[in-house]
Amino acid sequence: MQKELGLVIRECRNYRGLKQEYMAYKLGVTLHTYANIENGRVDSSCKKLRTIAGVLNIKARDIFTLAEDLHDYKNASWITDLTRQKIKLYFNNRPFLLTPRPLLKETDWSNL
Image (cartoon, rainbow, N blue to C red; front, side):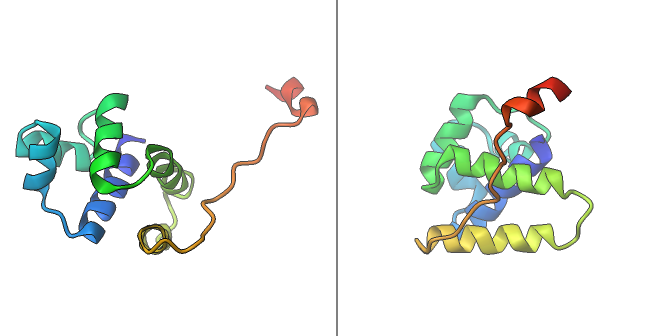
């Protein structure tokens, strides 16, 4: 899931028009470390992901939800384009739905 988180972070950063150097500066890490975050080579702490979300002006939970979408459909070629569209809608303050996660019913617990 690190790779998907990195892709969502990269797409958000690109949409906001921010450079990797700026993100690295705001996070207090080297450019190399930040690039590794976007490439999914570094397992970022929750605190670091919240800081990234704050710089990008997006909720951390929305980064995770978008990354889950990518992970769930990792073999589908269209999902990256859909993720870009969702990011664009998010930053344009238009209402959109992230893919809702169904809640488990009590009867589903027996299957776990």
